[in-house]
Length: 182
Image (cartoon, rainbow, N blue to C red; front, side):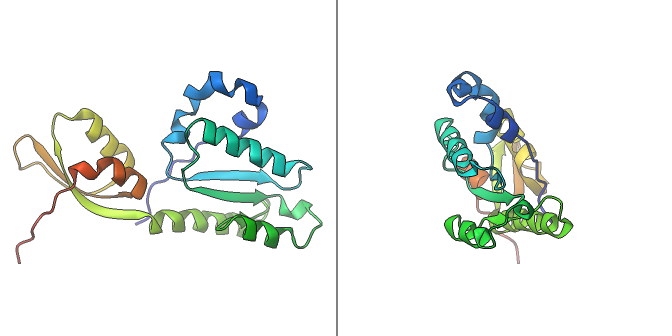
């Protein structure tokens, strides 16, 4: 099964907000810091796209999201006359993708690119969580694919989950080894 993916758009917010005002709006960007993957969509038809790209990277660094895996999506390639631009960008930004949002095949390629990221960055594990630990339980229910849950142990819930490496790092302290009966 493919993981559930939540997409949230903050690009327009960053683009339209002067960099000097980002400080006062950092709390609204909290969800960015909780992301497993950032899609950095860049309009390559814009004269100053490289400057915009740099400003966005600086903002992400400033809010503590600089280490989150980023997929650079270079959009509007259909509006650029440079036949080498896509190759140059793909080389400069490893794992990036060049698309035109108007091209259905490009949209499907992007979708598959996103799924592939999550499929290769998922881990399966077993967790044992105190039944009263509402914060951890909420994290599990909101960020993990629960493959199985066992409520038979008093005051503990045993989960078999699939989650991203990012969220596993936050839950690793709850990991347990369950010996299977043969």
